[in-house]
Image (tube, rainbow, N blue to C red; front, side, top):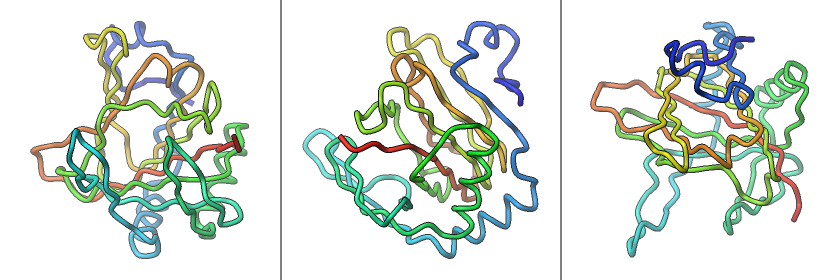
Length: 203
């Protein structure tokens, strides 16, 4: 298991290494590509809306939730109805749990269709995730940069190019002290699917 192997040497020693575990080839290239194509076809993708200032706008990506018992989850004041696990997602969850030692009961899929799709700076710190949430992130398809910046000092910024089939585990105080994003890109981009496995608790 490699950690932050794609940061340059100076950044490597500055970033708190205990907050991330990065495995570049968690899934073989062929397996990752086949899973991406399966999810593009099978997942019930939808485009949500979000409030920005006084306007309601479309979220610049498509999403799909899967979880245990087809229940609804409440996150950040919003209710999300989850879909029953696809066999491919259930198998991947089991593989991640066995590899990492962490337990998960849901997964959020984000589909970035091209370089125009993105997610803004944010932290995953909803109370339903607990005080020090562990989130396991699998990337499929197009390589995109995953950016971090320190909450109190935005000059402290780092990027990790998430490879097809890679696994990134975010843990510890990462969601307290660091924000993350996937920025828009002017380069021509193919689709990318990001799967974030989470343990959502009843509150």
